[in-house]
Amino acid sequence: MKFTKLLKSRKSVRTYTGEKATEKQMKKIIKAAELSPIARGEYENYHLTIVNDPKVLKEIDQEAAMMFGDLNSHPLYGVPTFILVSGKKDNNMAYASAGIITHNMVLAAENQDLGACYLYGATAALASHPETVAKLNLPEGFIPIAGVGVGQTEEEIEKRDIDTNRIGVNEI
Image (cartoon, rainbow, N blue to C red; front, side):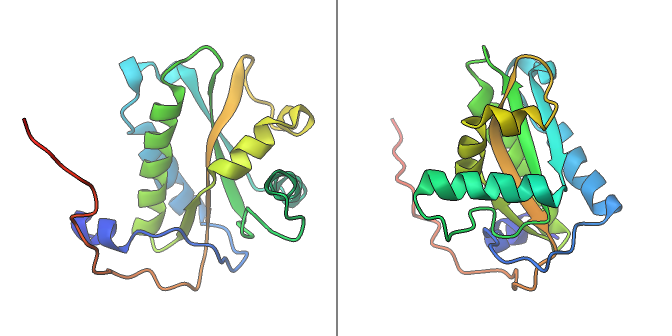
């Protein structure tokens, strides 16, 4: 897909069929993460955890629903795969770099006609539950920072007309 078309069609998908991305698709998503520019080139400060286990996904979903104060909600939107980006605790650039990593993964997923959604709220909820974080076997000293849900969807992902003057710009 051409880059501008990809940017214009990108959207947060919130309905999934339950079918995971293929192994080939996941490799492309992880490769996109690896190609992300990272603050000071310190790639060793980041770690990806691919969560496919339905029990762990349900736990994260319930923790996020509790944090949002709506126990009937499903903040993971039924994603079959949650990719967690973790970073070292003492890294002051972690959130900026994790944002770039997640964005690259979302674009890679959508470039393959997969649904994808940024899951920062669910990640924040996860981070406040050390018993669930422990199940993820993160490297020592790493904390959850950002996440992306990916999977097959029936939502239409098509080019949209987008106002390209949404962000104020000035020049000095």
